[in-house]
Amino acid sequence: MNNYQKHAVAEFTAAGWMNEDGTYKDDMQAAMCGHVLKLLDVFSEEGHSGTSATYAVDLFAKLASFKPIVPLTGEASEWNLVGVQDGQPLYQNKRCSRVFMKGQEAYDIDGVVFWEWSTTSDGEKIKSHFASADSRVPVTFPYTPKTEYRERGATP
Image (cartoon, rainbow, N blue to C red; front, side, top):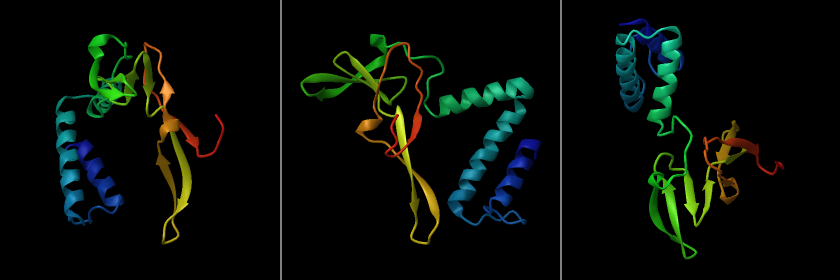
C-alpha cells in the first residue's frame, strides 16, 4: 500500500466509513472507497510530487467534473441545438453544460446558487443550496464559468 492509500484508509477510518480492522460499514461506501484507492494507486505510480501533483489533481478534478480548462469562446462549434424556446433556437454549450444561448443571448444557469439554513427533523442545522430562475447570469465571451453563492433573500 502506497502513502496515498495509507492516508486514504486512515481518513476512511476517521470518517467512520470503516472499522479499525478494515471492515466497511456500508457496501456502497466500500465500493466508492475501493474506486478511490485504485485512482490513488495510479496517481502514485505516476510519481507526482509537489507542483506536478497539485497541477495533476486540479486538471483531473476539472475534467472529471466536465468543467472546461480554458475559457469558453462562444464560437459556433461549441454549441448543440437542444430545442426551441419562445420561438427561438435554444443551444447548450458542448464544453460546459450549464451555459445556454437563446437567440443571441448566452447565460449561465448556475451563475448564482442560493443557500439558507434549514433544520432537519432531528434538530440538526444544515445549509441547503438551490438554484432557480434567478440563478441565471448573462455571459460575455470569452467566459470562464464561476458560481456566486448568495444567501436567500440577500441583495447582490
